[in-house]
Amino acid sequence: MPEKLCTTQLHSNGVATLIISGSQTATAAELLESLRRQITSVAGNNEIRGVLLTGAGSDFCRCRIPNGLSVHEAAALSGFAHQVTFSLEKIGKPCFAAIEGECSGLGLEIALASDFIVASRSSSFGFPDIATGLIPFGGGTQRLTRLVGKSKTKELIFSGDLIDAEEAHRIGLLNRLYSHEKTVASAKELIDHICTRSPHAIRIGGEVVNAGYDLDLQTACMLERNAFALCFASFDQREGMQAFLDKREPQFRGE
Image (cartoon, rainbow, N blue to C red):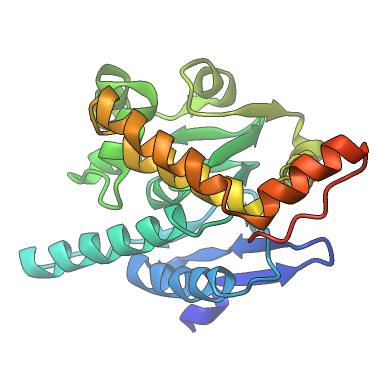
């Protein structure tokens, strides 16, 4: 059943681990529907302050694109993939993808919709579907371009070749590299640290970065100005400033 392709584990520190299993027999639509349900559940849970995406096995996620789709069916699948990846991108909580094996195709597109990607040195990345006459369909052509540039994105899409973790880190696809046995644990430590910060400021900061990326600099800076001013209407800002003056740890509420 689709709901078994993705599961969520809740932890006492407010971090949710979203495990994307997938399978060689699961269709892309089934995996996306299962992921959509988990994202909706996590986004609506105010007790969850951060999200860690991982794969259940050696690879980040597996699924298949059915053969013989009509043009209409293919467009609908791509539209659904865009809906799900945008919902992940706008989840309103810091979201990490921790990669330990191969991260390709739709798996890479899902990872690109997260805030950060960290990976083991043994992992690999790419879009191999050119071998079957296909291109990325879940936002990969656009998100990867904005991350590593047009030329490198075209190289990965046109060749279908996988690149290793060192190269992925060099071109800016990855935030951090870890040894294989420490990837998930190190990612949890990093997200735990980020979750000690103001949820309100993280949410607003993420929205400004995402919304301003495709705008001209002056307009984007106006968004920043307004968002900065709104911070001063929040409990978190008052608590953070008072905690600094009191030389104590702040007790943020995300308000």
